[in-house]
Every structure is written in structure tokens, then in C-alpha cells.
Length: 113
Image 1 (cartoon, rainbow, N blue to C red):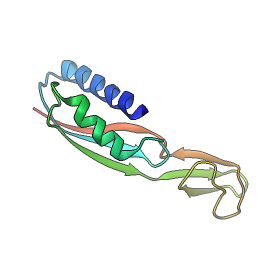
Image 2 (cartoon, rainbow, N blue to C red):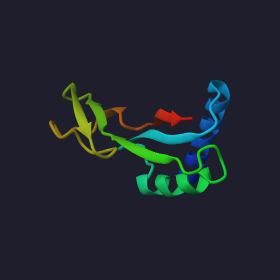
Image 3 (tube, rainbow, N blue to C red):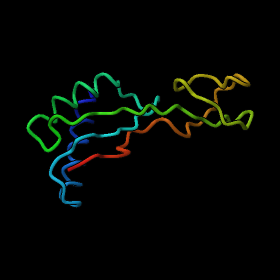
């Protein structure tokens, strides 16, 4: 379950930002999670609550913002929606699709005290 490692990474980022920006408690984390990121939203949610116990983010609310996958079809030179990696282009059926967006996970915003 790589979601545990990802969530531990989120905690490290929160701790570093708390030191840098001088806050002591995190109330809400808005996390962008791309549709192509290979991270399971419910597993992230579960791990978040577990990892944040006893930290500056204990009891923090996690808001997941799902971002859609986008790609560029090299065959028909069109930007397309991508639901899953390695799917064919819905326009021309070609498989030369380069992912442009929707494969990342990032902290978009924090509510802190």
C-alpha cells in the first residue's frame, strides 16, 4: 500500500511548512489527486487519519480534489480526456497518447492556526 508512504510524505511537507511559516496546527488540507495518479482516494483518507495522529495535523480534515486526466494524441494532434493510462484516443483510436495532466498529487491549500 503505497498510500501510506504518500501520506507520510504529506506529513513531512506539513511539518516543514509549519517550521517555515510559523504555524502550529493544521485544520484542513486540500489535496489534489489526479485520476491517473495511481493513488486510491479511500486509502489516502484512511492513511491520513492514521498518520496524522499525535502530530500538528491531528484531527485535520482532508479535502480531496480529483483532477481529470488529460492527454495529447500524437496521431490526430488533439488534446483529449484520459480516463486510464494506455487507453486509445477516443477520437481516432490511436495509442500514441502522451499524458499532460491528472497524474500528480499535490497539496493545493492549507487552513492552519
